[in-house]
Amino acid sequence: MADVTLRSSASNNGTTSPATPSSITAQAGNLLIATYALIGTSPTVGAPAGGWTNIQAVSGASVTLSVFMLPNNTGGAFNPSSTLGGTVTGWIASIYEFSQTGANCQLQGSAQASAATQQLTNIFSGQGQMIPNLLFIYTVARATASIIAQNTGLTFVRPDGLAPGASGWSGSIQGANGVQGLSYDFFWGSNLAQGTGPFPSASGFISVAEVWKQVGAWFNTTATQPSVSDNIGGNSGIYVPPFYQGMIGG
Image 1 (cartoon, rainbow, N blue to C red):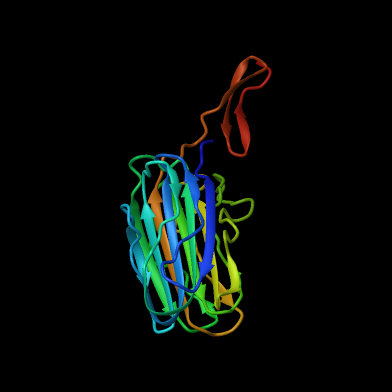
Image 2 (tube, rainbow, N blue to C red):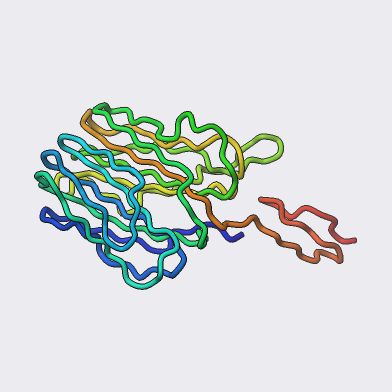
């Protein structure tokens, strides 16, 4: 199975402009995602130079979250720098590289949400049915509250309708709790194992009611289902997760 992988990631934090994550060395052709979480008074962030495209920007009076993409990157070192506006008292900048995305990887859709409650919104609510071979990302920023994630879906579903195993979502990648006055989490998952079906769910609770910002997005990939055939006792067995299916001993 050639599924999407998180090949590399890095993060940095500070208080002055510009905001720049630590550098990664990316493989040409992969999808890069850069996120900027800011706290202050009406904080803003500009697009990094070098072809980065904004996916969503959720601005506010105290917390701002902005997510950018660079598909089919040219390879080499990346630490995209973004100029800040307003009054920024703290920022967290992160970068993520995903494999198996290919030259034709594009944003298929995105969503944002903002509130000041303990309950986080399911950022993928109302999106309907998935197409195969998608990469999902989900990120949430707030002041100092910790998070209990409730991300579900992206799990292989058997023909009898049962979905064995845990959710296909990752844990928090480059997450931060109370850094520069901010808390930040980033999650990702591939739907290769599940294929089609309802969109996943990405939500949760934070420890106290305070302003939070969410962004979710999904992208097409070049991830491929397994095509494995082994000679088992003279006849081919075809891999149908999680077992080989075919004649044995013939």
